[in-house]
Image (cartoon, rainbow, N blue to C red; front, side, top):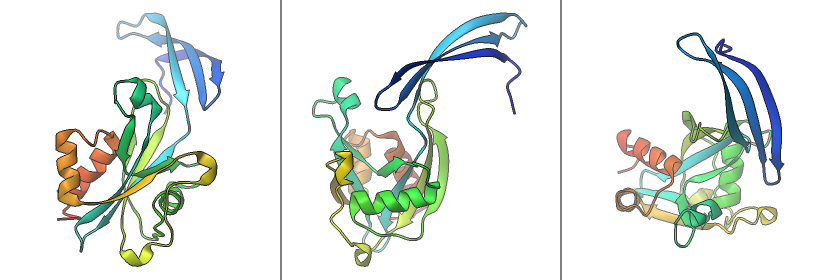
Length: 194
C-alpha cells in the first residue's frame, strides 16, 4: 500500500562502494495538510538472514566472533562482536541463505530451520530487512571448520557456548548485537534451551 503522504521522490546516488548510499529528496504531507520538503540518506546493503543454532540436549548455542569496523570506530575498543550466524540473501530465499551461511561460518550442515521474526534493525538509515531463524544442531551435523567464505575476508571464530553463559554475556554487555540478543531471548522465552 502506497503512502499518500509522500510524493515527488527524487533519488541521487552518493556512493556505490561497499554497498550503495542514496540521498532521497521528497515532499511529505504534515498532519495539518501542508507539504514540506525532506531529505534523507538510505544505505542499501540488501536484505539478510540470521540464525541461532541451539542444542537442547547439551544446553548450548553456536555463536560467531568477528571484527566489525563500524563498532570499532564507535568505541568498541577491539571491534570484535559476538553474533549469531548471518549473511546477505544474495538472491537466495531466507531459509536457504541461513543454511548456506551456517555451513560457511560455523561448519554445521542443518536442514530444519524455523523463521521466528522479520524485522528492520535500523530503519532510520538502512534499508535492510532481516529474517531471523532458529535451528537445532547436534555434533553429527559438523562437516567442516567454518570460519567464513575464503573470498569474503570474514575471519570468523566459531563459539559453542553454554546457553546460560550466553544469556549472562547479554546481561554483562559482552554480547551487544541486537539480532543475537533477540534470538537468545526468543530461545529463553520459548524454552528451546535450558
